[in-house]
Length: 114
Length: 111
Image 1 (cartoon, rainbow over the protein chains, first blue to last red):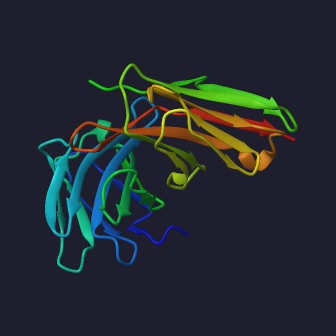
Image 2: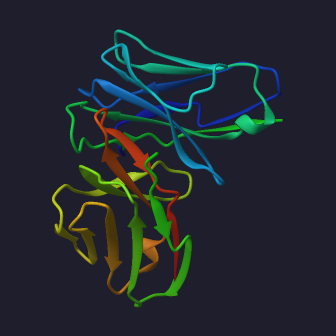
């Protein structure tokens, strides 16, 4: 158990809909990362938050947004969903201290857009 | 753009065999991490290497960071079915310390 909690485990929705994925980091970790994983593109970094503030942005679409709340949990919002958004979405947390920092991943949310 | 290439992409071996998987780049990384991911789960960190030429051992797993900090290898001795999974390498580079991920090596160890 990594200590990172992601909900829901599975999500099935239709094109054009909006969903929210939730992540609770490990106790004490200030940094939260969101990743998308698909078979053809591997693990793609979307966005990172540190103590409530956006720290780094990766390949996140404009239809996607995220935030980190004062209690450090984070939400990833995906809107106007398309078939190609079907993927595994992972949240990871770390202490955010820098070089070689360890990422602890949740079990992921499997999103299926039909 | 920094890229990490992992090889082989797929590997299927018998229990007891030895294997090596590779993680290569033309870029220099300040550190490199290896993760193992099992189906339905998130990646789990195995090791972090930070010094060129560094070798780290984790039971039957041996990790090496290249002298120039551009490549790494993972050697597994006497593989067991429990070693089955997707092995991912991730390099830390650039001023923003952003992690660059390889696509992974999918390993199947057959009893």
